[in-house]
Length: 242
Ligand SMILES: [Zn+2]
Image (cartoon, rainbow, N blue to C red; front, side, top):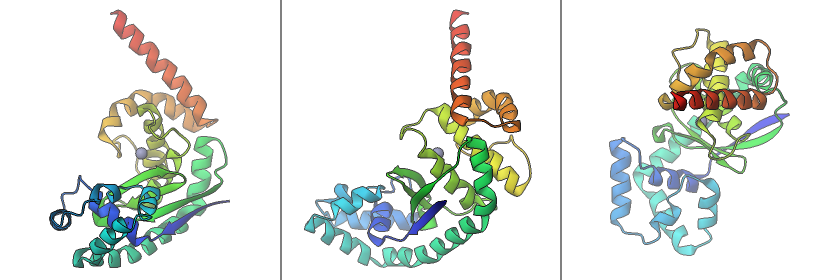
């Protein structure tokens, strides 16, 4: 049995919006600036995109006060209201697809996937998606193609089978399983072209022939990664000798 628990935590959503430094949304930037101008001294200690850190930071009454003030801002209130329907949408898409996605992912990784993850939903405007460790996933990105959320929640789930700072090869393999193979099995089409992180395209292209063979007869994904790692190192050595 494997489950995702979808969580709405207003304090976390607020901290996540405040800490989103990469945002280009003008309203979010204006909100951040307004809050920063109030010069709350503890700002940086709640400005985090990790749910556990936010919960711990609220032990401090000053930080609690600060976050409450940020939550009361009209823009934040609007974002919080929009988070609940977004959560319902993500949950529905996940559950609707689970019956067919789980066997595909289990086949490709080569072992059953058990247990649970908590998915902290943030509004889609935030454009956030990462595995925060401790069985926690943060998710809030608008769908860019059909079943986008279902595919990426598997991507974030698979991150927990690898180190927090996984290698590009491990990350590329996660993408081949979810962003590429799972997406195409659900939606049709083919790859390349790849979706996912552009900086991983080169490595995905290099391991693609071996990946195509692996998909025909999947065993354990960790063995596949070890084999590719050895091959890539061999190529590097040959290049250095030239
Ligand atoms: Zn990733």
